[in-house]
Image (cartoon, rainbow, N blue to C red; front, side, top):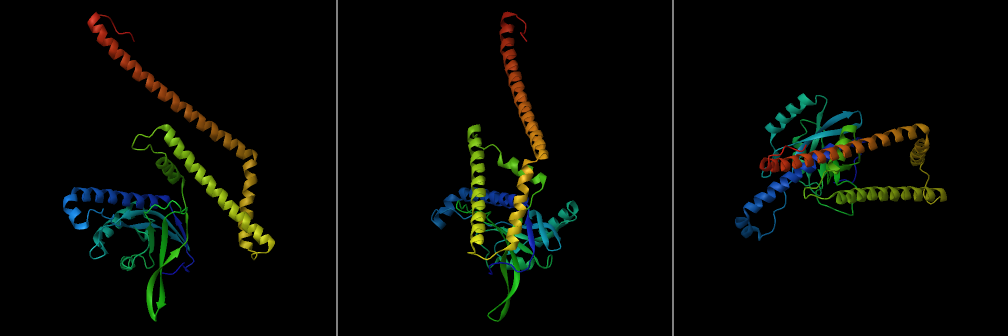
Length: 316
């Protein structure tokens, strides 16, 4: 497998695709755990009691291609036969027809799977999709947790024809990508990030998790700014050659900073800040009203029981 692609395509990946693949993997993993737990007496003797590894998941990614830019918007699951290493073609065509009715501008761009790296059997699936897309892409999600890794555990592969030992062969090559979001996706991702834990975590626990995430983001931003600063200093000293393209990007980034001190930015910021405070106050008042109503209902229920015994009327 080559290190990087030479096609010159620009890939934009939307968060919905990552969420779909992660959800697909989580569901299959939980189902496999339940199945192995139910068959524990029979399976324990065959594998020595070791847990079964979660099966890989497979699906298609859909989106649009405008010139040299490929934008991956969504994905859907596929049925896979682990024995023959083939996809259910009838199921794929049915799903493609259904998605074409809802998203007429989206096309099948490739497929996805889970794992630490591309396997040899993946090329068989890749070639099977070439009649739908002559140059499909392969999105691979690594479900293993690596706390030292700062980048997303997602890799996009393209296929290129290389001559190896005098024989032309298709191999996977890595491609760079960027995360592209729209307003609806930002709201959804923020909602998922602030979901209450299923174990009934307290508000303090959620606040600590939120602050930890903000601290990690600020720390990563600081480290990347330090890298850019050190690179510019080395370029100024003449330790590394001058890169005009990078200097233009840094200059463009610096031009955005004074815009944060403009009067329009302050007005927009104060307006959004006041709207947020207003929504917080309304939510607090609604919560207090609901609590008071529950208290009044409980008081009336208790008072009504005493009135039936003593012949008194309701207090409220």
